[in-house]
Length: 97
Image 1 (cartoon, rainbow, N blue to C red):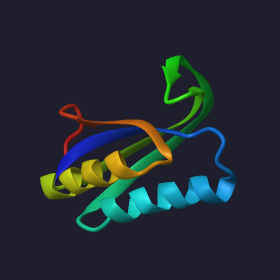
Image 2 (image 1 turned 90 degrees about the horizontal axis):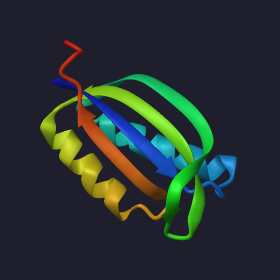
Image 3 (image 1 turned 135 degrees about the horizontal axis):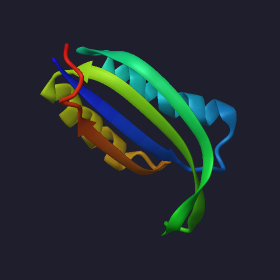
């Protein structure tokens, strides 16, 4: 398994339950064949430019280890999730297994 970092920008108007459901869904996909190492909630921040009518976003960073199949599935699911404004998955070469 390789190390990855996922940054999510979630719609800022979601209530706490909906935000937790999105994060739990993301964790569930990762833990199918991987492990979540750490999570960091950065909170609501202003976006550099308007995205889909939003000027703010709720930022979350998740570091995890997973297989490439899990990363592909995570990418597929996050693309079709309406509560996600943007996301980025980066492989971390500086972190060893």
